Image (cartoon, rainbow, N blue to C red; front, side, top):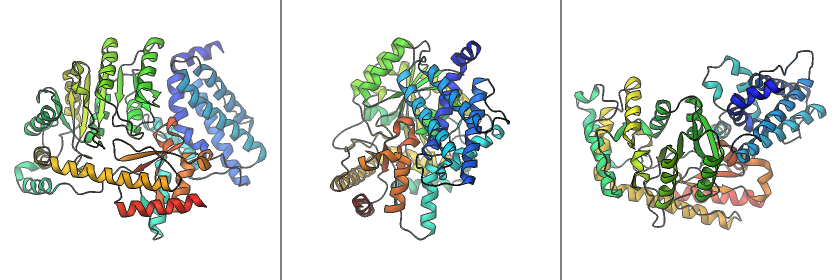
Length: 525
């Protein structure tokens, strides 16, 4: 046991966190005990045995024995309990205990199901089982990725539409409006020039970099060098994923709020870093948790990864928050990455601040800006990374080995967006605000009060009390099945997203009212 604990203290904590998160959603499927059957019991037994095997790999001790039969499941529970004990000794015990307790509880339910020969195996179980049983055949980094929780809703949505049912899709944050006409016209003109059909420059053409620098000077009063402090990326995800690969090494701790946009966590995991999640009931509490982490953890964060206005919780901050977090990070030599995807989507007079407005921020921070939401250019894949020279240089170098940048006509058209389309951005913002108002008002009249967001293109809604015990995935499935309204389950954004669903404001007001009417009827039943 002493040797096992020694192994665990050095490597199990990271691996267990990934494993627990990876399979957490799968256990939710087993809470309902209605259905029975030998075939289902056998499938459940295999799931437990596979889970025991994976935990055994992590613990470096044998947990599965062909002669033990179902008792291997009990060994799996003991492995979970052992992991639970060790997690209490780890930094951020509160967060890790929450995840571990959830998994431990689900595992005990599974053991009981074996005894009573009953289980409810729905789509999530099948996804999880397939993931676990095939993981030994998967590639190294693919094994680290969890089952895609949103796939369950996507499959149900596709089946409903195939059956000619009218689904109101408020799930994925995919802008539905057109790109401004001057941008489209410029793209057409640029495409007709054969010189633009050649390879471009991975860091972006100079005129586009100059234009984003000009925007930051005009809107935020921030001075940037277009040669050394700005780079064009193939969307925000490209910027974040490749930046993490460039600057994060094995075991480097990257702190971010949870729940969060999935790449904020799994981009770190794929880069071999340690994804350190802190709860964020409020931005101020996140700061308090972060300061506590610095004071108590033996592993100091290498990077802080934040995003405001925040997806999915829609929380917003003022410039003082950025001053505080920059000061804290600077004291400890920590990098900051701010994902500014919703820079232009502030409501009711709220103007989201840039972290680069803070004096000294460029010494430790970069900001990722995207054209997707501000200009309805999601499919165009144009983003920027701006700020710290050293981090920008690292990103530029790694990208020079991986790509030749965005198609040049798209870059040329993006110059027009930044230069001429400020009024279009304001119209886009106003559309989202009106949709927000319609949805919030309609939910309130339906007996489902939800806080009105000050930013983003989302609404983050606690599950109604009547359905809370079902969990976010089951509730999302019910909403799609009974009301034909698709939303995103909170568990898909991390374990601390459970208990919520996310609405995306991507349907027009008429369709939004249609969804509200259907939700009203569903909640009355």
